[in-house]
Every structure is written in C-alpha cells, then in structure tokens.
Image (tube, rainbow, N blue to C red):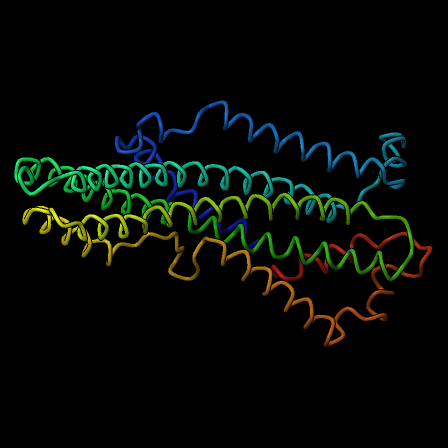
Length: 333
C-alpha cells in the first residue's frame, strides 16, 4: 500500500497539469468522442452498488461481523493496526477505481477519434475506387486534402495518447502493485480457509471482493487501450488500400506515402515509463507473475503448516487478524 500511495501522490501533480488541456482539446470535443454523462453515472452506480452489495452482503454473513455489530459501542475493540490498514485500503481502492474510470473514458475518446479518421480514409478509398481515368485529375485535390487532414489529426491523436500516458503512468504503476498484492492476500487467506475447515473469515471475503473489482477494472482499462491502439494501427492498412488502387493521382500518392511513413514511426500504445504496454498482454503477464510468485512461495515453504499455525492456530481458534495483515502487507515493506 505504501508503494501505491506514493504512486498516486506523485501522479496527481502531473495529472493536475496535463488533464485540463486534454479534456478541453477541440479534436476530441465532437459529440461522438465525448462520453455520455449517463454512461459515466451508470458505471459509477454499478461500481458503488456492486461493491456495497457484494462486500457488505458477504461481510454481514460472517458471524464475527454480526457479533461485532450487536456489541455495544463502548465494548467494541479493534486492533489499531487493523483499523489503519482497513481505512487505507478503502481509500486506495476508491482512488484506484476513479483513476481507472477517468483514464478509460479519456482513452476511449482518443480511440473514437482514430475510428473517425479510419472512416475518412474509407471514404477516400471509395472516391478513388469509383474513378475512371477520364476524371481522375478533377477529383484529385479533394482526396489529397482529406488525406492531409487525416494525417494531421492522426499525428495529433498520437500526441494526445502519449500525453495521456504521461498523465496516468505513475497511477498505473500503483494500480498494478495494489492489484498484485490484493490477489496475493486473497490466495493466502483462501489457503488458510482450505487447510483449516473453519468459518469464513471476514478478511477473506473483503480481500476477494476487492480483488475481483480491481482485476475487473484493470481488464476493462486494458481492453480500451488495446482497442484504441488497434484503431490507430488500422490506419496503415487503410492508407495502403488507397495506394494500391489504379486511379491515384501523383499528389495523392505523395501525400499517402508521407502518411504511411508517419504511421511507421507513430507510437500507438499506452506504455508507462516504457516498461510495459497496457493491453491484453498486461493481464496475461500479471496472471503469470502472480501464479509464479504463488508457486515460489509454496515451493520454498514460506506458507507451510508451521507458519499457518502462527496465523490461524488450530482449526477451532479465531483467526489472528494482526498476523494475517502483517503477511498480506509485507510485500510493500
């Protein structure tokens, strides 16, 4: 959690400087590029309602939690370390959800602009394909100007995608670190549950719920970035499809070749700190790294029967929540 908190704090300064200009950019101000307010409210509503229903519903089914609720407030006792870690976790999960939702909508706006550019290139392809040699020169300047505008817009969209990467790259590192250790804590608590047939601890349910929402949000963000990059790269195919037509004027060929050369050197992916790419490969890499780490932990006996006794005791004892939290958060220290 320490690494994630620092990443969110550092990224907030860069985000405050870059995000207003990106939101007000005229290139993505078209109605088809702007996310609808209803869609944003619906996503936030599903996130809040789902988290409350799943988290609160499962937690209230735990006998320990129900016993704590029915205990008078003056008698309730909670370990200060547990209270601090729980509060910090809730804040980080909320910040992570907001960052993912914000970046998801911004990248989607740029992806829609890339799709509009591809539509313009498709119209140019239709115009050139419908020509005959007799009136090719008369329609040449129109297509040349359309390709030049598409080329300039594509370059500006690539710059916006790079600015979005700089705006959210620190937060992305914090999000991935937090997702990894939330999943690790869920698996560790599940091992305790399977090896000791006892009541489901509230920590397992809370960690599993948080982990599910974290991974779902990360997957949706990776999917949006993947689709935006695919639309940006599809322009290369559209340009060469126009170049291969028979009735293409010399000015159009010159402009299309310049566009093709620009596309070869364009950066069309979200790559924070040039360390990893946010797309479907990120989810597979995170999964492989997580399972590899879990296997190493089990192989070297870091979660053995003797260690489990220190965290859980025998099958009838109450879980040692302080020891569990120490293990679950040990990766951040």
